[in-house]
Image (cartoon, rainbow, N blue to C red; front, side, top):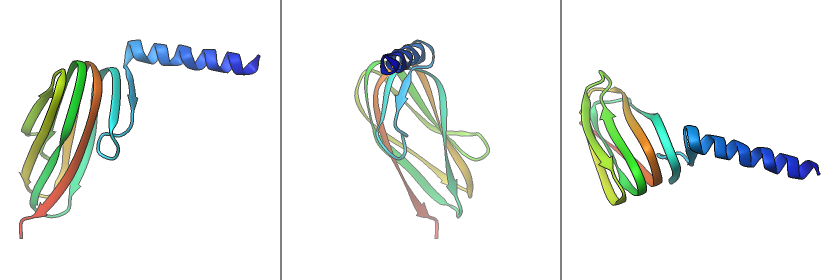
Length: 125
């Protein structure tokens, strides 16, 4: 009896998440991220300790909705951006400059699909 109640509460919780902010499984820069009706915005920081070039690449495979990825410099300037509409797409964004915290901002609009990103760093010297 108790197990059924717990399962019912879990199912109701997932349904509520799906219709509000969506369901997200994973962490985009560490493991593949699976999204179901994702809405809202997520930020991923990248800290550079020396001057150089930071490259973020990977792929997204969308079934519905839209995900927009924006790569920002430490001062907030947009360095590059890409969109992930339905279909399979490769992603390649880069930024070069001073040390600091670079940010990848992902805006979701009812996006369902998967996303996998990797980052690499090349020093200036």
